[in-house]
Length: 335
Figure 1 (spheres, rainbow, N blue to C red):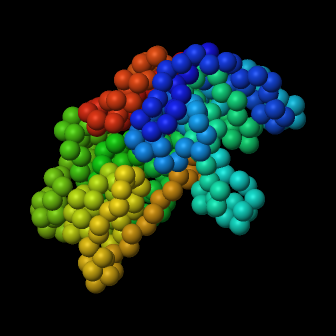
Figure 2: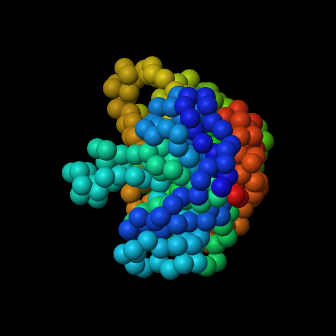
């Protein structure tokens, strides 16, 4: 079967590989229907930081159809459409047992510690599967994973009712967070996004207010006020510095952007102005919650995706996603 294979840092290949063999107990064979490229996929290509199996088939944002059941599988049937939970947590450490699987001491991810969805088929344990509502298309279902991450960010940010939120980075997570903030709460959302086409897209789709990455300009755009709640979805140190300068004293910044290196911060300002920095890692129950929102959000989500394109075009998708040139938030791949 056709698959994308990661062989090491900066080494990714489109190959023919054997179809997965016998299905282990408690697992299912999946026909991949639609998949998306995540920023962490680009990060892995550049650094290889989280890969623990080589070679490996990347891809953790995907939906699929069950074609074969292993022994002991209950609750699903051949033909069911499902989304795969990206977390490969241990289920046994203190965090997992406390319901905080996103903080698992042995956390891995599909497509990094085991083969993922950038292939025609995938084999996954049944406990990772979430059923797709009948009214949701394959392309929209493939957004359930990043939408769950965006929901986790909003839960960690916990903005006061009606309060404005400043989002830095209109990529998949920042853009989806902006859509959720506007659609679910109808609150003002200001957006820092250097890609003018993407900023305009999100303005058209959900009514965000684009602002420059400059604290004085942000305050002017907000009528002289300071945002009490910010989302950092770029991983860029310069952007982070502007958010620290822009946020109100006592304000909160939710961090979800991935950085490729160390990030120097103005810690004196954080201390003196009691600014909260809140980390956001994957999700807990938020992906399951996102499944319940997909049908409602489908008209908006359809406007921010490209494709589908074939699996053979995935290397071009990686290149475009890594350059930041895409206007749409996500290109959907259909093996």
